[in-house]
Image 1 (cartoon, rainbow, N blue to C red):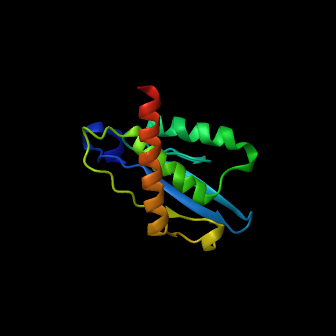
Image 2: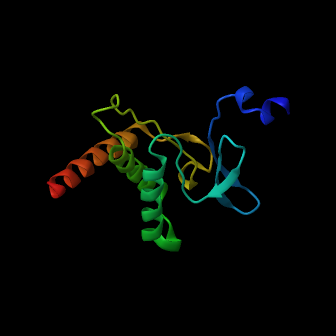
Length: 137
């Protein structure tokens, strides 16, 4: 308790994103806990540098999809696009995507997204970024 009431003694915080599958309700769930200890449930979220821009893109995707939602494979492709969209390649080191998922396709168990699908998402993200750059020029 002593370490939580004095800011100078608090450790640096970390944000955790937890994906789970509720066997009782038969539904996937997504939670995010921030450094202050708040834990909230989301349909889509992001953390870290570029969080606000990424969350805006996620909201656009969810609004477009409506109540139907999107598949995990579609989400992987969208994540690739968002990651390339929000980063400043002139200031950051090269992007290396690693993804995990929890979906019907893998029996709602956390596994790594197949490398080939991640590679496709990376290429699609770069292509989308290049396409948007030429339309704004």
